[in-house]
Figure 1: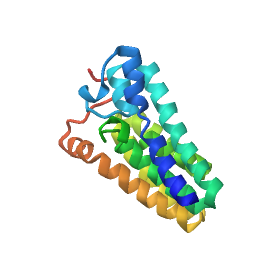
Figure 2: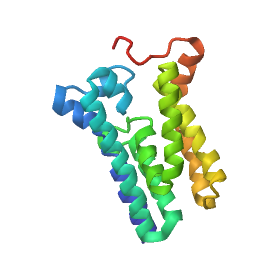
Figure 3: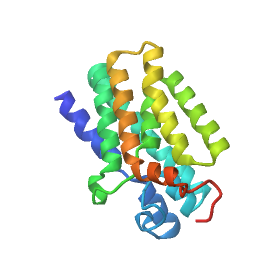
Figure 4: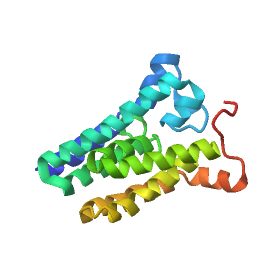
Length: 195
């Protein structure tokens, strides 16, 4: 019963798309019709502004953390990981918004923060340094995400957390496949470029 509750509630939490909600309230627009079409923080930041982008990041990270806490309540680390994966799926494919969501970076950040704060600190450092040097948010997201399973292993985390690190990083890489193509072609959006 606890597993079913964790899966359902975590998925529904993930399906709360703060990108859509915030931009609808602030600008009266559907963010899916602008920029990259993603509901995530980066597209909101680029399209609507820093304030709304920050709100979206906080909301998306919070739902990831809540999903982990719910799983931990019902079944420890294994259920926490299951809850995290369900929240990421909900974020990417939200039932409330036609199954069109974001790429899972902020939600994944909240999940990892709840599971392994020290791993999160390294990932966010890699993200910030990469973005500062390259101006590519997508590249920072990719490298930060890929560092997670490596550091889960190096910090001797339980197998369930290492598996989540691999699954989460794979999810983020898959979600960024169009960005990877643009990075290769040299056409990816840079921080500070025109909207």
